[in-house]
Picture 1: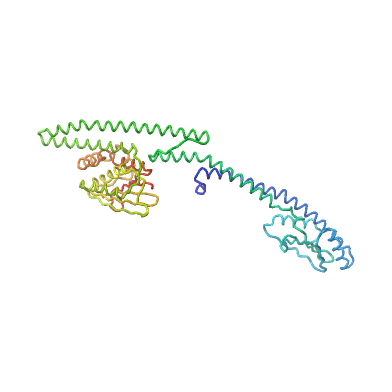
Picture 2: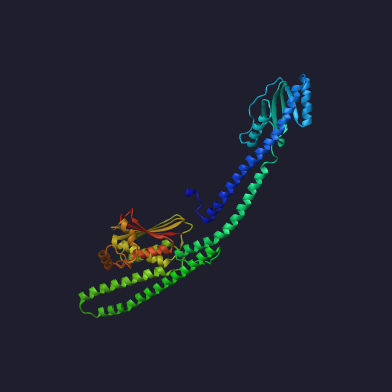
Length: 446
């Protein structure tokens, strides 16, 4: 049942309005047909039945067929009816009307009850007239009666007025509803844009409750932006300040005479520098970046080329379903850092990386696959949390051997996940169907 309901607030509100209107109109129409049209039709049919009874009585009192025909003609003239006498015939009692002729059924029932003879009511042969045939001892009299004498005139007009008034009511209500829903849609669009890292212009409007919700959203957005800005400045300052003692340590290492001890300390310093780089990448991902029209294939090629220069084996292929549109609104630096982390992880753990850029009308998918051990399904969600290392010893060893910014710190997948969220998408971890290792997919809406 839910699948047939409108998904939007405007459609559901309009449905809430339409259903009672339709029910009220249906009940009202049924009441009018039953109480008014049925009653009026019975009264008119009773009057016509009395006229037919009068004609039948005149015909049966006459002596001979000629006198009976003359009596029928005189009665018809007096009553304003068109009546003929068919001597010697027997009336048929079949009902002749359309199945949907509701008032016709009431008319037939009332005439049969009012005329004290076998009769047939024919509502099909003539367009605007009914033929009532009644049995007499001289034969069958047939009366052509205008339907206006048997039914209320223009019975459809009241239903037309009911339908027209309902249309006007629903139209006016729909216009008011649209105006009331517009501020809610604007609030939803602003919240969605903020979730994607874009600051859309929004001004509270509409009903008091909607304005209060809009004002609360603006306050919340301001607090979150200030909090992110403060944390970004703090982490950037801390990371920057840490480079000063590291620089002094590197200078001191150059002056050491013991080569073995100097190599160990140099490795520790290099690891600390990579950790600081990872912190900075993570902070930059939260700081926000303006979107620009970017070619994702060219960006992926730049990342792959940089990884190859570092000694990694990286392949790239593209699948474009929209050749007329090969670019997308992206944050290039944010996406470059995310893709570089995924590629470095693939090279570190799988020996090589394969990048696939797939573009459809709705989505931009960037897959990074490797032939490594992968990540168990139960731990994939945990792996994308900041500062989470599934295998601390392995990460430290990998970090020591390679230059991954997030490797060994637990930020590589977090940086990629935050980058995907800032584009309104997400990071999906799965098993690579081709290489058997991990497939990290950046799915971004176009």
